Length: 271
Length: 123
Length: 233
Image 1: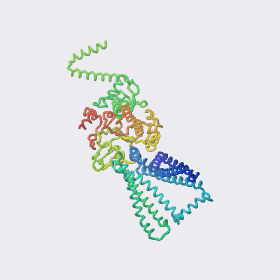
Image 2: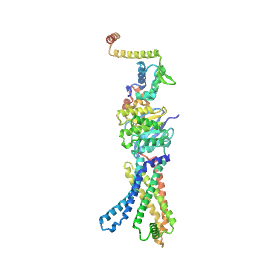
Image 3: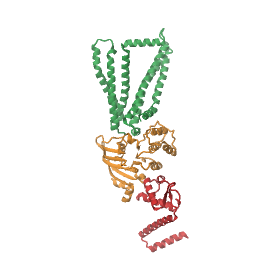
Image 4: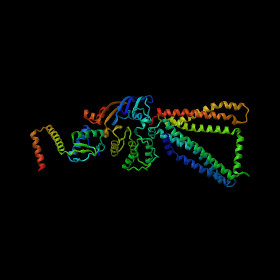
């Protein structure tokens, strides 16, 4: 049944996020072309102004996609589960676990796809910039490796593998907790009698605060460590704290999952 | 369109009368097939179980027979149809007489009235 | 076989103060069309929601085929709520595919037949249909299942007489002898001829459960008239 739920959920929800990401990619190419003509060197201030406008459009497009995809899926979840559409959703012969997973898996997937989309877009923008500006005497590839080395040196990353793994852990935990917070907040909001949407928004900020608090509490020892010990490498000290952060995210996500499932099974009350 | 049924008498009895009437009046011809319970119930706008009961009663009376191939069929026994017709007529007459009595007519008066009315109509 | 629906000591209290069902006990047999009748706020919809697993009772149990409301019962219960629950972005044929995918007892050919008879195009999107047509699509989807129990919440409220006749006809022709139809309504006179039994419910407790013919024979009046007597203010 989960397979069927997923199939229908995917079919019904893939279009809008795809369009959003597609539009972003188009805009990034468009924005990249601004580097083709160095208008900032010209005398015409109007052109420079236009250039800034295009960059701003690009910036807002990135923000728009990252928020838009999440918001679209969140609203879909709310409508499917807790408005009139819920009368069908909750009378399908499926369990509340299956319902939750059928909503969370596409949400998480779209989170990842949107992130990848944004990274690709930034890469397009960056490569076009390098390509058009061409620093003296260097090819595109040389420029990129040079910049990467500079960055690694600046940040003081000693162990590239450990850094990669810790970032991956934080990333996965972030996707899980991001999805679970959306689902959990909307679901917890249903407990607030008449003002369910307001309740959901309140729950979201509530959960967020708790999460931030727990994460900061776990970080404190590392902060002290960093302050007292003589070290050049910020990353060397912070690395373990990333894993702890990831663990906190995961634990809170699991708690939220069980709370949400319980609410759907026991406390559902459609208007 | 749904059949017009009185709201204060049992539905079953009314359906029964209704179908008997259809048979006696020749609307359902002897030997012809009767619509299925479901079709009849939908046509009448009544509960299929009630319709089923009414048809079972008709079967018990012999006005309707069940054949393996063609479902329910109106009896071809003309004698039985005639009998039913007579008994329905008798019911109507008794009903009529009762109401006339309520109006205060005596037997003789009723007969005269009928003769006068029906006579005029029949001639 | 046991009774289809078995409700015992069912109590539903909203927000710790509003009692919608008060220690309700009743059974509903198989193969009957049963009217759940009561004034507004008597607990009809609450009972229906519990049977469909949309509400969790405060106390007591509601069993369908001996099971608590859950995936097994939902597979055997076909429910028409008062609300239109169709996703407006979907096409009629997509909804047919959706129902066919989730409900094993769904009969797509029956749904298509009914849609054709009403002149509804399968390629239409729900959002382009009128409210009345949406309700008909929903009724068709619900009645195209071979369920054990059909639960219809106010199926004829707010529809025109022609649609009402169509709905009544659809209920009669689509339900099979082993299925039970439980329908709630406050428009009793329109529907009483198709009922086997009625349950009168008042303030969350049943006050009467009888067959329509019993009421007519014993009281000499229609269910509608008798209802007015029982619930006279």
